[in-house]
Length: 420
Figure 1 (cartoon, rainbow, N blue to C red):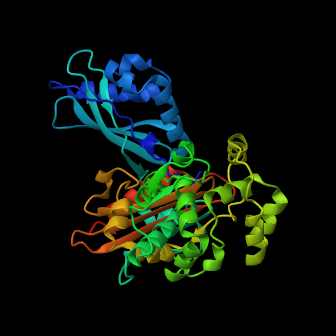
Figure 2 (spheres, rainbow, N blue to C red):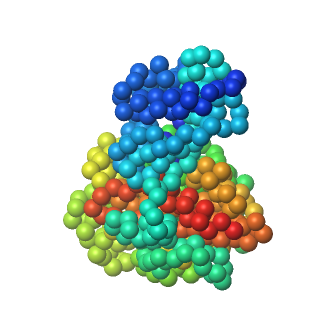
Figure 3 (cartoon, helix red, strand yellow):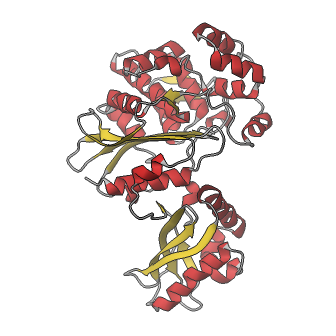
């Protein structure tokens, strides 16, 4: 939860030097890849040892299984195009809702097995006459999209751009901005060192670090944004204070701050969803004083990873208890940080998808968030002239899981259709 995972879109092994391959051999191996996914051919007969060593069969099956979960049943080979290099090409594998594609590389000698495969592009199955906006509108549940100049002077796409929706870990933008503002006021320095005292559930790594480990504020911020580390987030909120992060929500121009206040830590959100149903209902319907009292009552409670996994194993769970923002709200918080060089560098560490998919857009920053039934992507982009833009996409469905791969495919289509 609360971490955008797209690693399953990349299956990569080191390609070997190859000699010229007949186009039919390349096509046959592409068909063989599809046959492996269907369980009709042995893995080691199709993939070269260098690939098998890098991506064992069990890992490959898990990754393609995740693609099925995200994109629907596998239907077969959609395309195979020969590249300029010997034995190289581009493959497209069709699932019900989208085509996963990318480079494929064969061995340099018979039997010409697959030495490299990377699925780094997802595109929706083409429907004649439908744009990416049409497809976003047709998503089950509730969706929103906002692609506009960061200053709001020009909008290319909008749908539900003012609607308050659950955004998961994207709320961490408010924590980053609160830190950036504190540094700008001279109250903090990026290289200030603090001891690690907080602990939350993953996503992240710092929950496993020794308590008391000295870390800089910039390290915490980078971990919070680049890998959505929840412990780093809660540590920054502890250092800055909840009031400072809440003040940043208001200062950014959030249209309905009461929808997302009090600003929960990640640990508090987990504990709320682990707790009694009656408490969750009271929190969701409570006034600000009631909510703050419930959060105060969570102090000192132990975290139980097994319980947490069980809570989220069956799909969406009270997504009305979350962090909320609209597409325009996310543009507003990006405006607060767009000219801060350190914040911008932190936001640029993880672009959220393969950099090649941005085309003529330059990815200047990214944060996303998810839990079952909740998905948000928020990019700070720049056009070739250097002007800043925002692309914010949110999908909420209280009745079913939402597909990261499906929404990332739509994001790629949006960027392609609206290339500057």
